[in-house]
Image 1 (cartoon, rainbow, N blue to C red):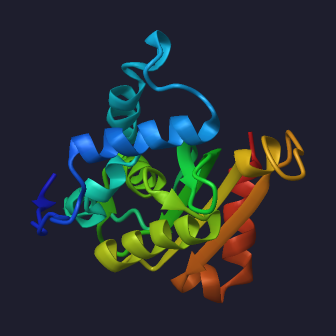
Image 2: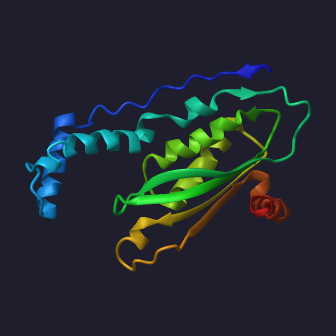
Image 3: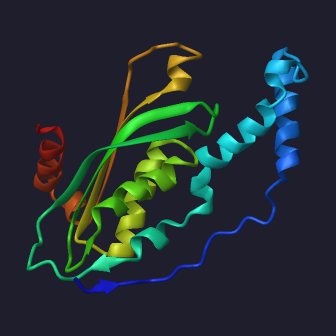
Length: 203
């Protein structure tokens, strides 16, 4: 296949605190929670938390355009929906910094070019590995694909459980939140929306 490769600048955050500053902040939180960061079981916790946060929030170091810049034009005339469903993801609520656990369903209508299927899952991960609201994440995934690929339409549906509801506050375990965003032909045509949702639900 012929590939079109685009290079985009990497996002750089020069104001990021040092590793030591991050670890010191964790020690403060441990003391605030009522524990002693000097006890044996917690001595290495600040370093572990900082390392874990670097991984959990690694999406800030990645640019979705870098992932989506590689597309393929040789599609043998295929122009119907491309759907990747049940993409698992983990994110964190920007209000309480506790996990959001869910799955994303992403579809688009090609306009002469297609994405490698793994790229769609990677874009979900990039936005998931940031502090998020589910509504914003849904729109960000759709907009990134729409802006880079320029398809005839994009459809994104996310189903997730929010630990800020399950672990604190109302403490309602098992409830899920559903969000969806449509662009282009999906937004303009209710029949396309219904077809997307039918394909997502079909097993």
